[in-house]
Image 1 (spheres, rainbow, N blue to C red):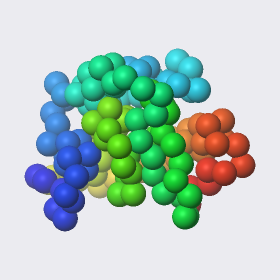
Image 2 (spheres, rainbow, N blue to C red):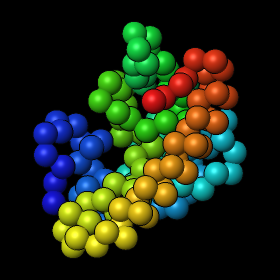
Image 3 (spheres, rainbow, N blue to C red):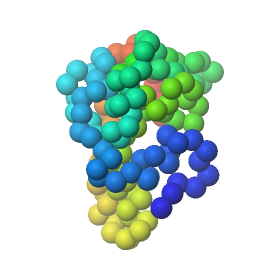
Image 4 (cartoon, rainbow, N blue to C red):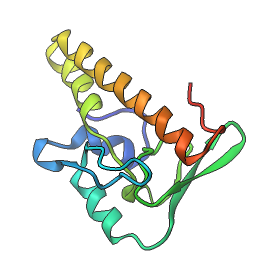
Length: 137
């Protein structure tokens, strides 16, 4: 199953990935030390090959916020830069897509718990990376 309506590989890559394409790692732990996360293997390879301090930026309101190299924020629709070298998380999206295939409502609960944990983590990370500025909603 493919994510429809998306023109960016960052949105279709987690959908097309199988278990062998993901990796539990601490690669994207800049200012979030030793926090394990499951991402696509390809983004780890790209991040390790990337040269530079900032992989891109994204819009928060009307402000461009930088994404430091090896930082945990994942790309979204307003993100620009080297998308493939950013954290491309796989878990929750994969669970939600499996639900659309098999109808097992427990998958939605699993995905929701993953999303809640990720949101809480991102709030903490955002406050470290951009004190007083990064408040997702």
